[in-house]
Image (cartoon, rainbow, N blue to C red):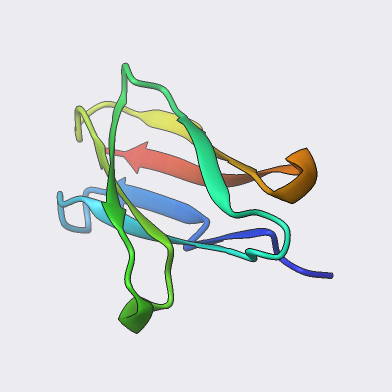
Length: 101
């Protein structure tokens, strides 16, 4: 079974025991089925999500840079990555985000 949109890692978290820095998630699309990310949906009240282009050296098509707005506020949310491909094929991948102050 092909993975249409692979997100690595699928879980990102912050706790009092690790650094308060942005986390990066690599997205890789199986271009036979999905060739474009059409939307990235997330809770804009608790997260900052920026997109960076991937490159062949990292084997990723897109990098998501994720950071909570407040490292001291408990938060659990899901980022939904929506893709579209040939013939209108659609697919979603999820990245789960946890902030545990």
